[in-house]
Every structure is written in structure tokens, then in C-alpha cells.
Amino acid sequence: MKLLRPTIWMLGVKSLVLHPMRSALTVLGIFIGVASVIWLLAIGEGISRKVQEQIEELGTNNIILKSVQPVTDQVADGGMAIYGVTRADYDALKDTIPSIDKALRIRDAKRELYYGEVSRIVHFIGCTPEYDEVMKMGIRKGRFLELRDIETADNVCVLSYEVAKQLSPLDADACVGYVISIRDTPYRVVGVMERRGTMAAVGSSLEAQDFTDDVYIPITAFWERIGDWTMERSAGTRTNEVIELNQITFRVKDISQVIATSNAINTIMAERHEQNDFVVVTPLELLEQARTTRLMFMAFMGLIAAISLVVGGIGIMNIMLATVTERTREIGIRRALGANRSDIVRQFLVETVVLSTLGGVTGIIGGLACPLIVTRLRDLLTVWMPSTMARLPESVADVVPIIVPLSIPLAFMIAVCVGLVFGTYPAVRAAGLDPIEALRHE
Image (cartoon, rainbow, N blue to C red; front, side):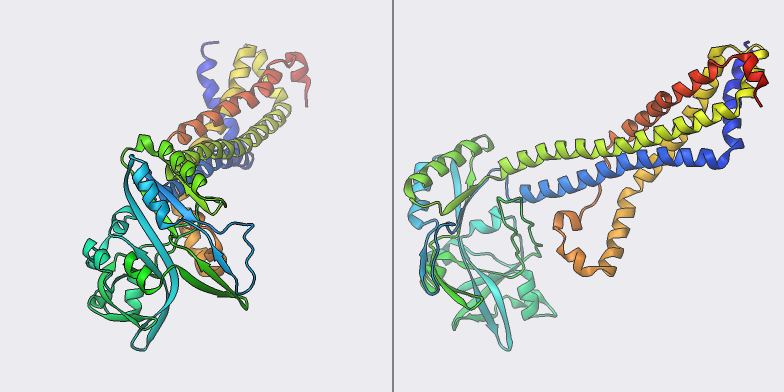
């Protein structure tokens, strides 16, 4: 008996080698299952990390108060809509809530910029010097707006990199010192911002923000030169709007005070406004929601991948049951030579463990290739289907899969356990064959 047992592993491996195609297909089932676990969790982690980064860019100790047109506020063609956050709201909130460290006022509108023969529709933003710090922009050349620009309502502006590049294609930095015109009002360029991509929308709470067309001026200059009234034309209709502030971004002194401060802002604004013409967005709450959603998403993706592992395990059971039928006479001979039932069980379990291990190892290799393959595939799809890729959300189109370290041992252990579980029944069935009947089997 002791001489028989060391040969169990050799017998198991030899049996698999004698049927290479069948063994390869069984290994393939486990490979797909293990690779799926790693791939799906990696892609899910990549998408989740991208969304969290976008939320963190807003600042976890920031609170955003935005003006929104009430749904019930129906304005006829040519009518006047008056809504949104006011300068008085800014003063009331700043003076009432002690936890507010800084408050950034923003007023914006679409305008046409002229410089020589060049013209471009730009996002004209009136703001204060805090904008650069709060929005984490970064100056490429020159300077951003300063306190003296606000106090004097000076006609100075700072250009986004893309706008500067259009005005000066050879050297965007050369725009510093240019004098541009917006509605016949000259503005001297004092700075050029670093390149900044589009910030994707975050659920239904915050719309996408595109920095590529931005031109920044002192908010006091915006109020003096443009004012609160704007006129929008779309689809043959004209709408007049009066908005004092499009947005206020508050920076809270301590992150532990963010939620309480957000609730206080909501309460004060509700008392001051009869209509629901504002919304309060708290990036910290969005980040916590994103992290909770990530866990649910990862669990769901893992469950889907685990199903493919179970399918691979069923494949192992089918193959081993067929093997038992084919090798009935062999089993009878081994039993006649002195092998007991435990030896037969171990022989068949060895075969399932070898298949599962091979599938698990190759699946891990295939899973680790996920970031490279996804990146190459995305580059090819961008060339072949540029319009389709352009319509995808940024968090999906630019996703970089991130391998979850825990997924590697988890997928491998599940693969081996699936092999053992689904290989146990065929092994027990083989061991239960009557030796005499097995020897008579043809």
C-alpha cells in the first residue's frame, strides 16, 4: 500500500496528459473564471477610483451652493426669469456660519471674444482670487486675479490654456499682455492657466464642468460691465434671466464640520427663498456615497465572475464523470492489486486539483494582463470608432483597470475549492465501484 500511494500524483498527471484536448478545455473553463474575477474587479476598481478622484478634485472640505431655475418657473418667449443665489445670501451665510473659512463667488455667461481676426465663444467667468486655490487650477504664465483687481473692478482677464492657444498657436504663454475685446470692452490678459481637462458629471448632483473655454475676470468687473441680466437664445426662442450669483463655493475650516455646515446652509437658504431655486452639493457626502457604491459594485462584479468559476467547476465534474466511466476496468485492476477506496478517491482528486491549479495559475497571468489589454483595446476602438468612444462618460472612456491585490489569492483559492467540491462526487463514485464488476467491464 505504501508503494502505491507515492505514485498517485504520477498516475493522476499521466491520465491528464493522455487526454490533452479534454484537459485543456477543462483548464480553459477555470482560466476564464479566474481571469474574469480579476478583470471585473480591476475594471470596477478603475472606474470607482476615477469617480472618487473627480469628487476629490472638488475638495472634500468644500460645499457648493448653485443657482438652479425652478421646474415650475415657466417663462414665455421674451419673458423674464428671476431666480438663484443673491449677493445678500452670500453676506448672510458668511456672517452667520462661523465654520466657513472662505467663500468663492462665481458669476458666468457665454460671450464672444475677439482678438484681431480671431473670434471664439468663451465661458466668461467673474470670480475672486480664491478661485485658483479652491478649484486647484494652477497658473502657467503670468498671474491670477488679485485683490486689487476686485477692488478697482479692473479690466483684466486670465485665459484658459486652450483659449490662449487659439489666440497664439505657436506660444500660448505669449498671450500675456494681449488686449482682447468682449462686447467692445477691452480686457488686458494678465495670465494663462495650466491645461485642465473636463470634469465629468457626478451622478445627478453635479453637472460636467469644462474648463477649456474659460476666461476669468474680476467679479466686480463682471457686475459693472455685464450686470445681472442676461439673454439666452435657443431654438428660435429668447429667454431673459436675472441671476446675481451662479455659484458660491464655501471652504470649511475643519472637515468634521462639513456636514453640519451644509445643513446650516440649506436651512438658511430655505428660510430666505420662497421657491426652490438653489441646490447644495457636498463633495464629502458624494465621496462617501461613491465609496459605498464601490463596495456594492465590487461585490456584484465578483458575484458575476464567481458564476463563471462555478460553470468551470461543472465542467470538471462532467469530465471526471466521463473519466470514471472510461476507466472502470482500470479502477477494478487497481482494486484487485490492493488499492483501497481512499487511494481511488485521492487519485481522482489529484486530477481535479491539477486541473484547477493549472486553470488558476493561467487565469492569474491572464488577469494581470488586464490593464495592458484594456488600454490597447481602448486605443484601437478610439481609432476605429471615434464617435462612439467620444460619447462615453470620461470615467468609462479613460478608465485604467486597477488590479485588486485581494482578488488574486481569492480567485485562486475559489478555483481550487471549486475543483475539489465538483471533483469529490466523481471520485467517491469511482471508489464505490465493485471490483469484480469493474474487472468485467468492457
